[in-house]
Image (cartoon, rainbow, N blue to C red):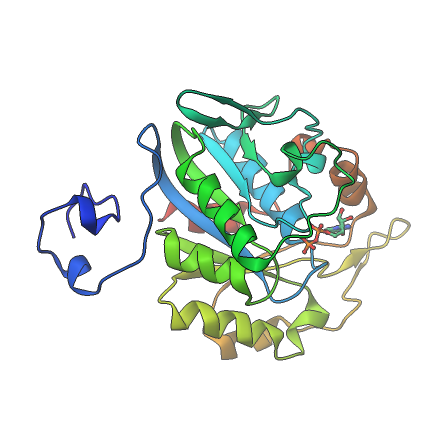
Length: 272
Ligand code: ADP
């Protein structure tokens, strides 16, 4: 594969190995230079995937990287809320312009296109998948070190579209301990394997609680970490159930997140 590969075989004459395994990757817009693209996925909803995506973006941004978040969770978009973004998406002759947070993280989400953020998105799968593709092709991301894609939970249409049409450097899987005991994580991992996606690692959210009185750590759902070995994927982070995290995220101030809890995950991302 050439160093200059845009993933668009139709626009290139090189006869490289990539061309031989014909792909459906769409090139991103011509004004974009995105160095690394990472999908954040989960087996099911409510495990804190969007929260973790936001915290990873904030941690990367604090290290000086240029970061964007593509909110592909079209029917349950929560990224703008976590960053307190209420502005609408604008467009100019170059394309759709993402919103920018106080810290400089670029964000695009369907919620920035709805007249009223409370409106539900009741669209058919192909329309939703088309919009996700547009967020990749038509948004003016400019220069980014990392674009994080907050995928909807599960193994449906949209994660499939993201995996097939966006050239990813890898995926991070967010789980919660009770999620692990089911087959759900395995299904999501198998989907990634099936599609040749490099799984960077698992981040276990809501992993434990720290007692506010005695400081003791309780693993409310039991100690599950050992079981990750059987999936052949590294555990790269553990986050506690923490009411202050929930308040920060739900009140739009996730940019105040400043913790070492995601350091290992960031190190894995920096290896890409
Ligand atoms: P998902 O994207 O997996 O559906 P969200 O990221 O939207 O889940 O999180 C669901 C809810 O749980 C949100 O209100 C969020 O603030 C809260 N939450 C997520 N992670 C934590 C945590 N570690 N501690 C406390 N609350 C959390």
